[in-house]
Image 1 (cartoon, rainbow, N blue to C red):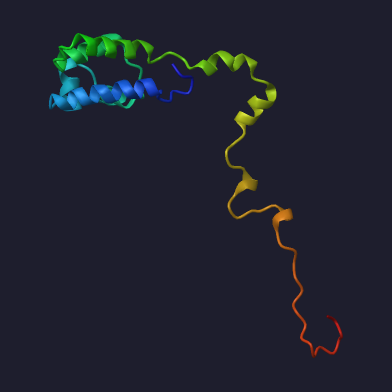
Image 2 (image 1 turned 135 degrees about the vertical axis):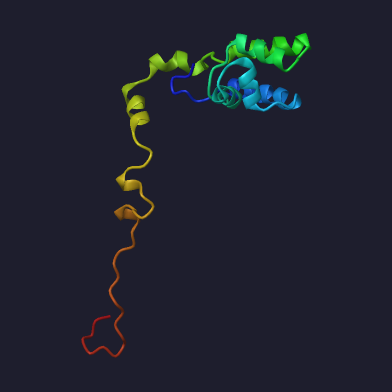
Length: 140
């Protein structure tokens, strides 16, 4: 499972397929939850990819949705088994240097990156008010 709990593409894809099957049967998530003796938010989280789904849950949902195609059931079970597989980048985490770790910990916005602030080098220099040509002081 991803360390930060964000849904992976595999989970979202599996959840979308399960939602499609549920809607094809004309069932609401509340009805499914009641029949499987689980909570309605669990169904919602499974379909939105916010929660890992076990192959057992896929089996129960397929039975409830009356899915009879063995190839589709196998495909969904395979997706559930692979849904928590970590991405390739996890293996490379040990090669992170302190500089990249520090960069990732920095906040997205700091006090100096507000939309109303600009660095001094980008500001226009102050201008003197123009003197009129008839100015007796003789300044240009």
